[in-house]
Length: 309
Length: 278
Image (cartoon, rainbow over all chains, first blue to last red; front, side, top):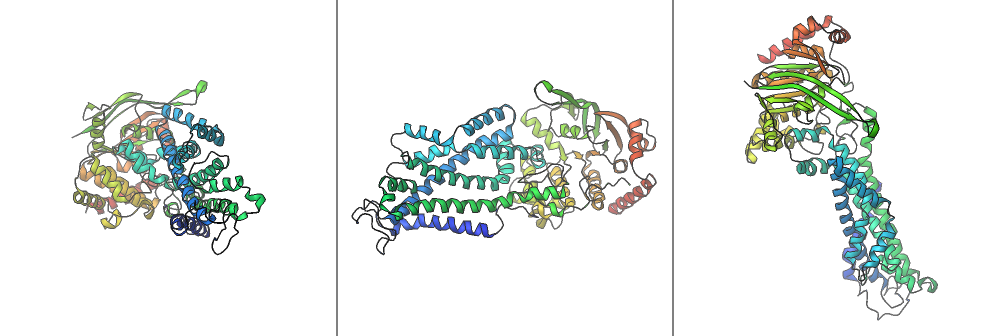
């Protein structure tokens, strides 16, 4: 890995992942304009897939494709919003704790650890029960504020390692202010890690939303893939043999999660080979993790040789 | 003529946790004075406290006790005083592979200190200064190097960038913490000669930290030998090398592989220096 990059190398994994996630995002953006009203109940109930209704209809006569398209929008919005909140929180808790050290670190890490050991879904349920009418955004908020601890731990340890990097100290010597060191010197080197954490947070939130919806604590009045599955379950789609009602949303959740994970794997390929390169050459004073990989291969072959002579 | 004086510097580190906590005295009562235009070498083995002295001078560590006086005046901890101090005292780090941010271009590394210390204002003036700095450390054409990122350069080139960064605020004193120990043998001399050259041109006071007695002798006026946090021997370079008094200095000298080559290396260095001066 001779160069520093943010973008992962092009691989089959990355292409497949981008293809899948790109396709689903496109579907969520475009399809709602092309389908009928997802709440239009004038169709016959339980129609199997046909030319008129590509994915059939539900018990109430809703078009499944229309529901799926609007549900994609809902699910992705929940996922993105929750992930944005989770990443913002993990940045605050992780990077501040890692950079500041001392008591700030102790307190922030304690909060993080508490969040980490509280079982996620029960906490989400408790919070969700308190809110009588839950909008899509509220659900995203709940998922966001409960799902940040894991990435905060990762970001903290990374920030801790970056803090003692020479180039951070060099900018201290140059007289740079703390916030600028955090934002300009440290944060860019966390980008690959942040991207990976963000994508996993999206997957986590979409799955969490589906879980919440399934136990009846999802957003009221909005359509998501999760609410579709709940309604299918409540409408006895199983016993009626209406597979076209619950298979598509379930499949999309699974495929979208898989697609994002594929993208994440290729981001990992950016982050991890650096560790390997360092181990091979082994001539750094400090073992740099993700961020200061740079030109290990162009280093001199015998850097320890002395000029004493 | 400015001076940077270290007076009775002591630095303790706390090691361990809880009941096992103890103190490690990394630097024990070290005093010396850097004068403009002079080079002082701080020599010693790993762990002798050389780097801690450097980091304290760069204000990366606060001394446990003792004083740092710039032009005879103690330096307070306020932000403006700190910035003024950093305007005058800069540091070159040991590892050029770690001291440049892999995310940023060479230009960024030089622009920031220029802007922070108000050396140049406005985009054009800053770019001009950046080009000037790169030329001073022999990285030409400057615009090509300014656009590069650290990974596109060799260790020697990176260390030149690090030196340019240290010069950017217009520093009068330079702390060079083993500036060539991470570099390939073949390019060490070039970097050291550059430092010596700049020192003469800018009349810099340089603290040259090294474990290499040969270069310490040839590039510095005075040598301080550190051992376990204390200065065990000091004096004019030739005197310390040719007539060592302390047992530790003798051991250090004995550890250098082939004393007969000292003279040859010195002649080579001097010849090269003479060539550069001409």
